Length: 123
Image (cartoon, rainbow, N blue to C red; front, top):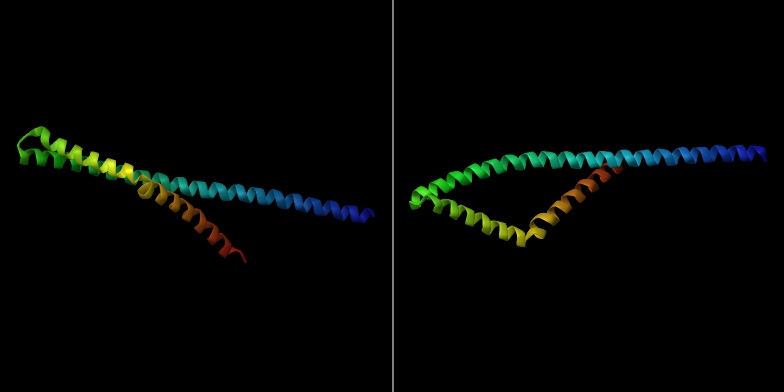
């Protein structure tokens, strides 16, 4: 009887260790996935920042060129502003299809692909 209780205590100790190990493993996986997503967001933000600089200076150059071509300084800048306003309205009206769903799908794909890779690595 005493031997059975000792074996049972040993089993419960192993189960507790297993549960604690699984909790730690889950925490590490969450931290890894979170850091990968944050790293991708930061890298994407830096790339977007550079593209915004190119877009801004290109827009200024285009506005100056239009102003010289039309002959009035303000007209080129108003045309460029109108183009951006039109693009902004189009993006706003189609934001779910153009922005929200692709971002959600990319995050889900990233998380799902990492889970699949972990399953392949297991013996």
